[in-house]
Image 1 (cartoon, rainbow, N blue to C red):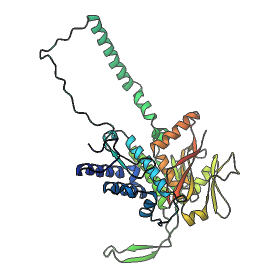
Image 2 (image 1 turned 120 degrees about the horizontal axis):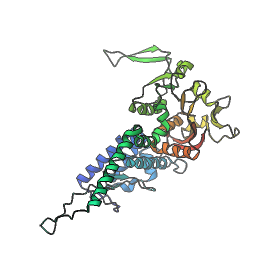
Image 3 (image 1 turned 90 degrees about the horizontal axis):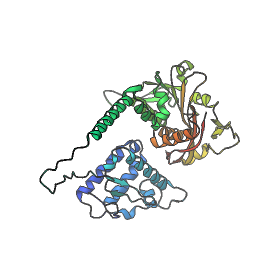
Amino acid sequence: MLVDPAADSHTGLSEEEQSAIHKQLERLLASPYFSHSRRFPVFLRYVVERTLSGHEDSLKERTLGVEIFGRQADYDTASDPIVRVTAAEIRKRIAQYYQEPGKEHELRLSLPAGSYIPQFNKPLKEEPAALVPVPSDPVPQKTPAAAPELQTHRHFWKAVTVVAIALVILGGGGVLLWQSAHRSPFNFFWGPVLNSGDPVLFCIADQKQYSSIALRDASDQGRQIIMPDTLTAVVIDDLNPIVKVAGILQANGKKYTLRGESATALTDLRSGPTVFVGAFDNAWTLRLTRQLRYHFANDPEMTQLRIVDSSAPGSTRWSVDRAQQLATNNYRDYAIIARFTDSNTGKLAVIAAGIARGGTIAAGEFLTDPANLAELMRASRAAGNKKNIEIVLSTQIIGGEPGSPKMEAAYFW
């Protein structure tokens, strides 16, 4: 079926093969690796459609920058790597998609390194047709009987094996299943939260963004009335990590509630685990991280925002220039992820907070991505499997869109 893995041309594909490629593309784009992004699906769909239409020769960096990202025809690709960064992230997400169980029988869509022309290959494992052996001798052959002693030993070891399996599953509450579950990256980080008997609280940043609000008439939706409004609002970018983490909690039957940071009291934090989202717009995050090795800091004018390492307080390597951020929307952002028991409440605290909004989005992606959590789990094991965790992440922001998160530093205690 379809293109052989060794083939390097897409010419001559049948309608059936092109239909299969389109279906596989839609599977990819509907997966969590692509469905929560605007930029990646547009890019991948564009290069696939151009390739299937026979225009793969036009898939050059500059052309993609102009056609997909609206850059000028003479833009400097060396100083604006948006095409390369986007392609690298797409390659990573495609690889993560195909690593999931059951994907080995799907058509393989890939974006080779150093190229923007997608490849379409046969599945790594195709279902083989059942082969029924035909005996050369039509007369059935009688299998020689095993010696009585051998048969006895076989029955004995079969019985021992069955009993052993039953004891493993039933005895001790299913130890094998427990160990298997606790080896997963998700359970490594989220297990203490999920195993708590208390509901989880999201403490989220809130902003008084609007002095007025436009309300639509129920009987005439085209008619709007502007009314004064002083209610708080949630920053839209903070919803990204909230939705991702809430999905994990909901999938595990864990109850949760949401509160704005201005409406959160210490008594709320004593009720169970809390996930704190946002940094400079969330006072609780700043209070809790102040005692940690990595914490947030700024100059008096709030023009330089940074994450500080208490062991090297003079370093400014994890900082965001607010003027550059506002002028270009292209910058490197940083975030803190932490999970620890707060000494004031005795409850678990989880931090997912960026210096700017892109960092917070990257923190949410890191906390819900099995490959990222597996990297953190390996670092934790190397440090002796300590109970509390804090890491610093970085992500490249291009056109306001964050790239993949990268772990800059980690501390365990």
